Image 1 (tube, rainbow, N blue to C red):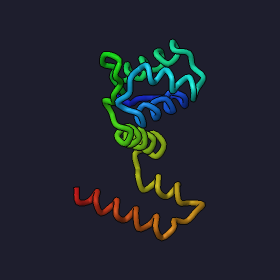
Image 2: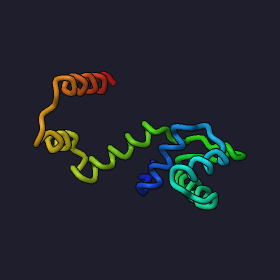
Image 3: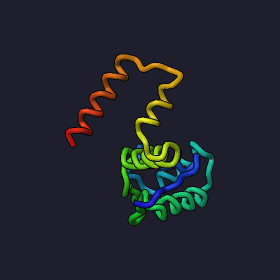
Amino acid sequence: MAEIQLGVIEARFADMIWEQEPVTSSELVKLAAEVFTWKRTTTHTVLKRLCDKGLFENNNGTVTSLISRPQFYSMQSRQFVKDTFDGSLPAFIAAFTKNSSLTPEEAAEIRKIIDRAEEG
């Protein structure tokens, strides 16, 4: 799947949609007016951009996701590791933990994640 780039506001709006879905575009207009102080046209413009990027679909005024929030952020994380650490997860973890230690709970959770990933 192609890399999807979102600006900060687009990401916040996408999070709002994921939290509310399925949601009508009319409800999104109301929510965006409250949260971002957007006009109706701005909401529809940003929604169209997110639909064009393949994140959501607007089917007869009902907005649903084509990519879930966990799928999207997983893709973003993988792309970050690829771009920043030449795809090396160990290099990312080494950089992440360089100036701070993991709590025993964090280390245990990471071990569980690794075990699940090894099992397939």
